[in-house]
Length: 420
Ligand code: EPZ
Image 1: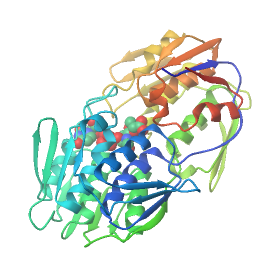
Image 2: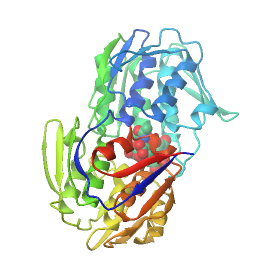
Image 3: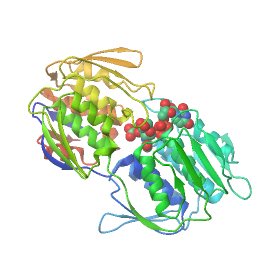
Image 4: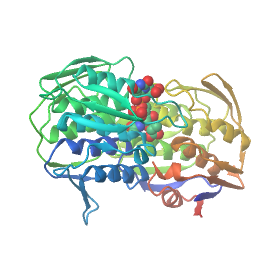
């Protein structure tokens, strides 16, 4: 079982390049199922979750080739299965995103029912209700979602989502692309990854309007052409390295990223005392050697503070000056990293879905265990600011969402290495 061994104390300093966004590449890869023409994708990050999605596409009959420029050439012209099997779906919930594309193009799809995970029950009821509104019949049988479109295919519909769901918005957008007529999705998610997916679909000849707002209008088309597309930069990876630099009182330059996709995070880092500057595709952060000030935050759908950055700012607050209150409103169990942080000497009390974090000057290195992707990132940040050694176990969670994390942190001067 791989582990990360971190010797803390050094402020991060230097520059790194940010990878393509996991949470945009996953829906975009699912959307390649919508066309029989070849698609070329660049800036797809090399992550475990991406490998799992490619494995899933492969078992549906999709051909995938990595070219010499590390671009993915995807060919969904010979689909020979409509089943997303349990052994793949159980390792990655985002597999549910093949449901909409398979159903709208082939009229049928069988996807293993995704279970919950460490951060919450993660239901998919809104995905299924939306597909039913488009005329699908949905049965749950033997742990599988059995979905069938009416003869003639899915039909455009007016859908009002009970709550903001990123995956639900993506699945229903993709299902609407080849439906008969127009679909309106109200109370849609507004995340930048939704915009990236819509831009990809429109590149292939789809007709999606309103992405980035809370109302999407998708006019169904008969079919999509092929094309090539570059996946957006990863705003959460960006925020994670900025939070690590702030916690370690460092000075970093992040390239190949877009400051407009994480404004709520940048505002919090400025409140913590960071000196930020940015350009079209870069962000720099300088703490000028100062300890961060504690910040209060409350997670909510975009453009508010992202839940995927909560654990990282919790780790920064753990060594900040003052007391910060962090409230998690999206997932029911996403403050789990506080227990491991307290084992490292943090002073965090939980009151319902709020963590009250009283900053300490330094944490103490300890053996800790990762529980989910972003909680693991917070433990790495804690290890970077702790005295002594921190051994982070179960780092397969990290490999799901951070490309070459130890190499990038080593480039920023961290004493970190992977041990088996
Ligand atoms: C996406 O998950 C991201 N994953 C998550 O990132 C992210 O935390 C989340 O959006 C919120 O921003 C990917 O994009 C692959 P939701 P998703 O549907 O789509 C409830 C990471 O660390 N809900 O927006 O699963 C749900 O329980 C991952 O990179 C329903 O009740 O999130 C949650 O409380 C973790 N019924 C809330 O909505 C539904 O049918 C938001 O979930 C769907 C969702």
